[in-house]
Image 1 (cartoon, rainbow, N blue to C red):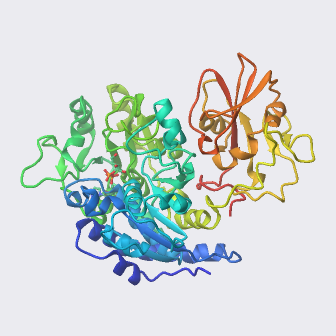
Image 2 (image 1 turned 135 degrees about the vertical axis):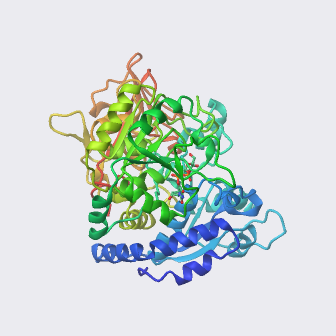
Length: 568
Ligand code: U2F
């Protein structure tokens, strides 16, 4: 049985010392310890009757190992990316607070030791059982484990979770398919289940959403913030000078400067970076705690387009700022933007921070075209006028992250064979006693699961399933969203049968089964119904003008999109 623990002493010791990245994480862990402890108490109350199995967990942070080149650590104090460090610090704390048996490795030597593989022998199969129930790592760590364990990695890979900031879509993850169909990148092709990849924001439902946390306020702090807001104070998002290089920024910075005092936290060594105009009050890179103080006073936090999808806007919004950011038209993606090129995803990034845009929105987040000076000017005036309360989505609170991680740890299982499902014959027809396992929801085109489900174990449970057909050219991500739901790839295996087509009134001339990440789908032109042949290719992402896709959707909790209502 896992027992919540609020003392972080043991965790701090395990993280060790000797690198700026580790010091940054330890400062963060210490600073947020009280917040984690009170969240643990609340969740403990909420989960009173749940048995929580204590797992043996290894965390191997590959990108911080010397062997992977560790380009991040030397930049911690120089404006380099901190988002990843924020997330790993929070993952470590959450696993520790949940009471699991945790081992942490930041080097190949430690990894060797924990896996019981003697160092310096090259690849060496792990002959005995894996000494862990779960391994959290990243793409660098995965590569290192492959070198270490050779082919035996394959046997154990269902225990692995890959922390993957921007996400990996199934078409890129499937080695053979990616190679044949042009989805091969430097990262993907590990043949994992899509949900073994865990992202920083809920980018795509094909992956699991891991997240991180932002600081929470007590009542006094909330009141003080509202009292002390300086309505003409803006802070610019971007701690590295080259984030200020955006073309045309002179124009909108001049407009902003007409109305507001502009602050920055741009790293510099001795001289003021030339990219930062003289009228900007630059504080230099601040420790996290001091940045929070600055954000508490500011009314506006403004992004110039880079960095993409980092933690800072959530921190700003949590401290009562309005986040103003540029809309990207056309959206940025791995097809048209250097930063995303080679990343194993086709996701279209509609603004600097799509999560803030889509999940939070007005009045906390305003997304506009920065080239339209009138709109920009009017928006700045509006921001100075309106009052906005601090806001933090539940999924980014400590309790929200603990709840989500707890649910994943206790329920996600990529190791057991998926028997007894599908209970289908070779042509993928349902073999249950009823003619069709689906019911049509009244006055809709949405199916629910009707059969006696007791014999199927599934998480999320089958009661959450809502089957929807996409329009042509529409992905399942979009189709579920339009229905007020979210796509749930774990439920694909239940709808990959002929009966789904008939229950949705698609008349099939023929039914085939193929490896295609858009399947199951219906092609209107040929009245052809296509089933998915390889479960690793079940994918919410992806669309084609040729197909109407069958989509397994589910409901979700308010502020916790990763979990369905019956998921806890
Ligand atoms: C993102 O990485 P970044 O590190 O650039 O993300 P930010 O949102 O700028 O901030 C990360 C943290 O840096 C902290 C701040 C955030 O928690 O509190 N910080 C600070 O301590 N002092 C300062 O003066 C300013 C900020 C993203 F997270 C990565 O995954 C991406 O790789 C990267 C590129 O898109 O963007």
